[in-house]
Image 1 (cartoon, rainbow, N blue to C red):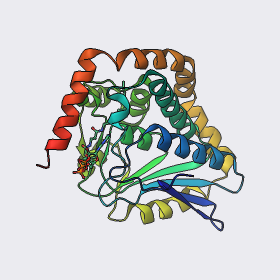
Image 2: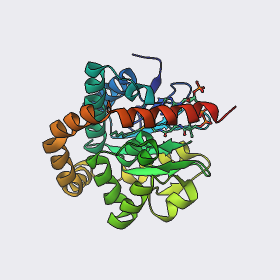
Image 3: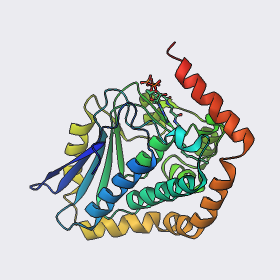
Image 4: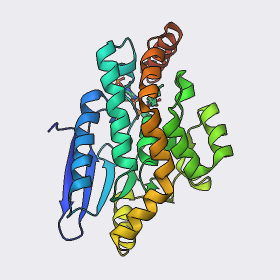
Length: 256
Ligand code: CO8
């Protein structure tokens, strides 16, 4: 395993905490997604595991989303693998039979928000930001991320947020139900909330989750090949590369 995350399993409660620790920003590159995805798929199949909490050890970032360098001047085979793995980790989370929570203890833009949206409950530290800001980079969030956003905050809010690439503070995110709670200690708060969820019989809770999410999961599985084809054609386009290059330059020069 990479050293970019750790898993701490509590045998008594059946809750595993996955802590992402890939400096500087928990940005999701191919290898990181692959390893995380495998870990989640393994936990999904483990009988003794009943709950999963995702969090970060970085002081101010949950995840900065996809590693922009995977999309900037990409190598075609790797780009295809990259997106396939991102689809895969989303499916593993969104259709996990376990109770999955996000302890969002830092910024969580774009892919970071997509990951958090794929869990069942989100608790966030005050002041940090979250949202699907893809349009700010000149790219478009995939339909399945959009569907999961709609399922959480509703069609109108979602359309508005996605078109404008809105990043919300935790306080604003709570108001529109993008997150469920604010806490200075999101991990502890998730561990506490998890106990409420684990009081229910797993099979009933899981079947209810699938009943709610089934149509979104089926639509994603049906459309994933086309979504991949679209992505690998779209990203290398000259205009998209220019927009990504400018965004990267701005990101780097912000601090100077
Ligand atoms: N990819 C690559 N590198 C990144 C990323 C990223 N997503 N985010 C940050 N970094 C780098 C920074 O460039 C910086 O590098 P260096 O130290 O070499 O200058 C380092 O990580 C640390 O970042 P900051 O200094 O900016 O840290 P701050 O604590 O000041 O800010 C933020 C943290 C708010 C997270 C800030 O870094 C930020 O805004 N990052 C960009 C976030 C973003 O817009 N991500 C979008 C990624 S694209 C995506 O996820 C798309 C999903 C769907 C794709 C659909 C395609 C069709």
